[in-house]
Length: 166
Image: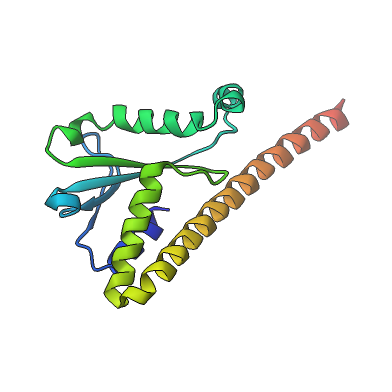
């Protein structure tokens, strides 16, 4: 998801840089001049509603997982906010739901990139950007499911080997 944002912002000719992860700065993308000329850090966070501690609450409360992801990112970003840099956590669920900030930022980047190539391209570029985001999410899900499947197969083979010895 971070790569999709970065390449789209490059297409929009926005000045940006990738921030390496450290304790004082979360990993993300820095836009030195964003809304109102303020430097803004975009921090991407993808969270699964299928985590054991999320399932029960997310079943009853729509958007609970997204809110938990935003709160987690905001609590870890206190050092960024104290530097005068705006901090925007871009939170998405593995199942596809996005926060309003994420939708807003993607739409703004899509419009900026579309305007660069002509006003007629603005809407189509934004749609293409959201499609790329969806593909990135599903690729991530495929890798996650493959990894989990490998773990399950390994566990089963250990159980079967143990039964053969007995």
